[in-house]
Amino acid sequence: MQPTTAPNAPAPAPASSAQLKPRGPEAVAQRDPNRVVAVIDGKQITAQQALDLLKPLPPQERQRFQSQLPQLVQQIYMQHQIADEATKLNLDQQSPWKEQLQMARANILTQAYFNQMSKNASSTPGQDPKQYYDSHQDEFDQVKLSGIIIGFNPPGTSASNPNVTRSEQEAQQKADDLEKKIKAGNDFTALARTESDNKQSAAKGGDLGTFTTGDAGLPPSVKDVMVKLQSGQVSEPIRIPNGFLIIKVDSRTKQSFDQARAGIVQKLQNEKNQAALKQEVDKYKIQVQDPDFFNASTAPAPNIPSLQKPTSPQASQPQPKPPAQ
Image (tube, rainbow, N blue to C red; front, side, top):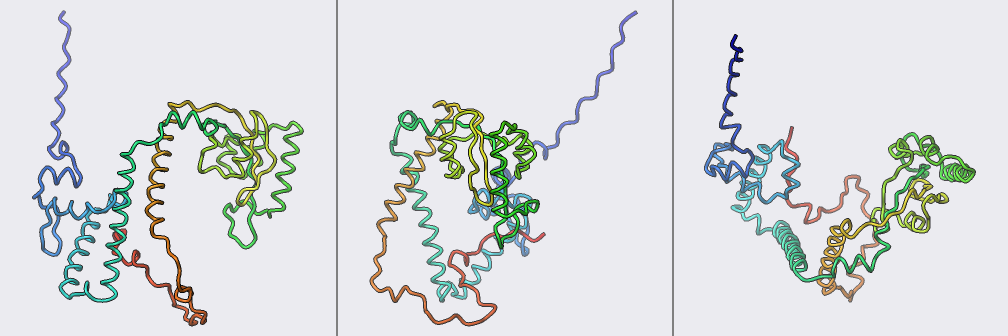
C-alpha cells in the first residue's frame, strides 16, 4: 500500500505593492517626490513639498504629531501662505512686527552658533576617559539603597499624595519612631513594605535602586549620608522635600571602567561644551552705568483684572500647535 501524500498547501498570497513599499514622508518623497499627497485650497501638494514643510520641525515635534500629520501639514502650509500675504502688505516692515522678526532671527542664529561651537568643541581632544576614571574613583562607587519615606504636606499647599495628611512634626515623630524600631532589631524590609509612603518602592521592600555619588538626581542631603554608610548600615531620618527618608545601604560595588566609559565620555563632552559656552557668554558681561534706566517704576500698577505681561519675542513666534481633533 502506497503512503498517501498530503495535498500541497495553497501558496500564500503575494503581498500587495502597498504592503511592500515603505511608508512615511521621507520614504514616499524619496520614491516619488512629485506624487500628489494632498490638496489644500485647491492646490496640489507633492510629497517633496509636504516634506519640505515638515523638515524645519525638530524630531520630537514630528513625533508628537505623528498621528495627525495631515493637519500639521495643513497648518504649516497655511502659516506660509498667510505670511506671504502679510509680506505683500509690508507688515514685516512695520513695528512691532519688524523688531520681533529681527529678535526671532537673532534667537535662531544664536542657537545655531552655539550648536556649531558644540560641534567644534567635540572635535578637539579632551581628557582621557581612563585618566578621569582613575582619578575620580569615588564617583564610581555603586550603592544599592533601600528606603522608607515618611511624607508630610506643608501648610498651605495641595497634597502631592492625597493619602498623606500628616504635618511635618508628625512625620518627623513617625520617622524617629521607625528608626528606633530598626535599631531595636525590627526588619527594615518589612517596615518599608508597611510604613513607607512611596508605594512603588514599598511594594519592593523599600528597594530604591542603585546609585553612584556622581548621580545628578541624588539630593545632596542623601548623598552626604550615603557615602558615610557601610553595607548593612541604616541612616537617621533625612529631611527631603515634603518628607523624611531613612536609607539602608544594601551593598557597595565598584563600577568598572567599561561600565562607566560612556557616561564619562558624555560628562567630559558636556564640560567642554559648557566651558566654550561660558567663554563666549563672559565676553558680553554688562556694566550698568545708569541704574535709573533699569529700575522698574515705583508707581503702583493699574488695577486692571485683565492686565497681562507683554508677550516675549520668542512667544510671539508662530509655533506648531496640536491640530484640532
